[in-house]
Image 1 (cartoon, rainbow over the protein chains, first blue to last red):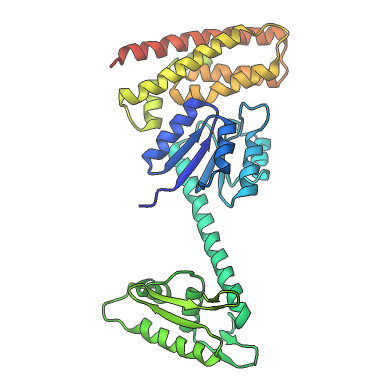
Image 2 (image 1 turned 180 degrees about the vertical axis):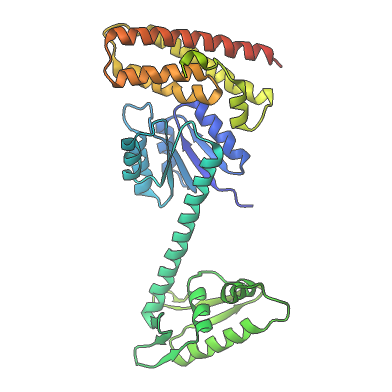
Amino acid sequence: MNRPLVAILDDDEVMLRVLKLQLERRRFRCVAFARTDAFLQYLESEERAALYIVDYFLDSRRLSGLDICRKIKSRYRAPVIMLTANKGTSTIVNCLQAGADQYIVKPYHIDELEARMQATMRLYDSQQEAANVATAAERLRECVTVNWLLRVISVADGSFVRLTEKEMALFELLASEDGPLDRERVYASIYGAAMTPFNRSIDILVSRLRKKLGELQAGIDILTVRGGGYILAVPDREHGVA
Amino acid sequence: MSQDALPWLDARLLAEALETDAPEVLRDFYSLFLQQVQELQQQLDGFKPPFDTGELRLLAHKLKSSARTVGALALGEQLEALERACLQGSSATTLEAILVATRRAGAQTGREVQAWLDDHVD
């Protein structure tokens, strides 16, 4: 089971240890820091937390919680939740302007904090998926033009293929994933139901899409990964087929 | 609700927050908190008029959340009053009165926490 790593900075050791224990009981892994300099050293290390929790009011002459939040945001694409004992509007505005994704007022209820953490991480995961789509789309753009709305894929010499709705759905799905997609997931995504045994719908759909992509002679293909489903192979100008 | 109506130590709160009533776990937290309260008392003793309200506010703010989390509600309330008085630029007389009340709350809370620790020895 995946246990997200959470990095916490709070110079109040009681609060820090309470939060660490609470999160560990809820199956998070935690690294906890009571000192700002130790936390900054951690930021320079190779380990990356899935989420950072930073106290707003640090007893540091040099850096505030907002400064730390900005440092995290300038380095990594990772969610930050600010903990504050002050629910004043200016404090909340400061948190959000520093780039914090969420804030929570102390004393908090751990259920609420966990819900905010999960919501923030879900949002980042979905944005990461969107980023993957963009990357695949970039590679596709180098060899074909995809009109997602009209379901038409064309190449520079003007030849094109028109896809059915299901074929387009399969193409979008494969283009959004860097690794192989298993048949069950493809089926569930396209047909909205669990695949029944001996169902050949996906095989037929893949076969039809593969044939149409082949007609374009753009080097795009659907590869069957033994035991792993399907993967879209898109030519990469620098490194060959990806 | 007046500050006096709040308990010096509501031991249920820390157990609820940590989702355990295991004494060996709770003891660590109360011991650490007691140490913080004792440090607070020493630091508060060092404040004399004219008060450095910036430092005093920092001190009050720092322990406020811990106090409430471990169930030292009266001390948490008193620290909030001290922090607010510093922010509002209250007079030295007012600050002195709040400081006296905070020291008293700190001393009483310390005794309550120590009593809990004595009742839950290994």
